[in-house]
Length: 153
Image 1 (cartoon, rainbow, N blue to C red):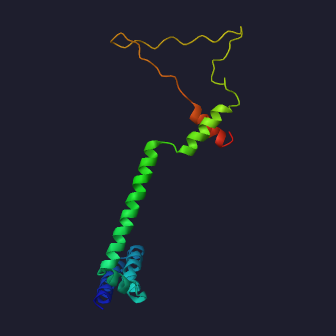
Image 2: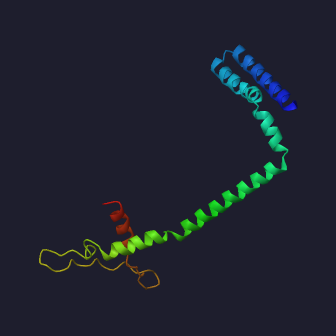
Image 3: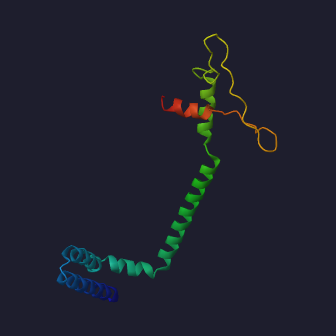
């Protein structure tokens, strides 16, 4: 009963603010305020407020909210771990199978020049101040090829 009274008071206050705003010739803003002011009394009239009031003071409801919170946390943790690992087992198996049955296994080999010899390799990267040339790792595009093949590209 008290919750419905509070909702009615909030709605009355909101409608009063909307009336003052309309008096100042700001009709669009006054209409928005009136719309929001009618929400609490509408909720009280539909019984939602009574349901929320009973739920707020129920230990069983709070235990249920706790269980839901644990479920959400577990789901978020598993998503984070899954992203951390990168790929699933199924994707790794598909990538391995795609590597075995590649259409053009030598596609990443250097192209030939007009004379039939391999193209000249670009000059080594400039040396760092320490004098040692930075080492470059060979790139592995097998996972990208597997994804493209999976999508029919």
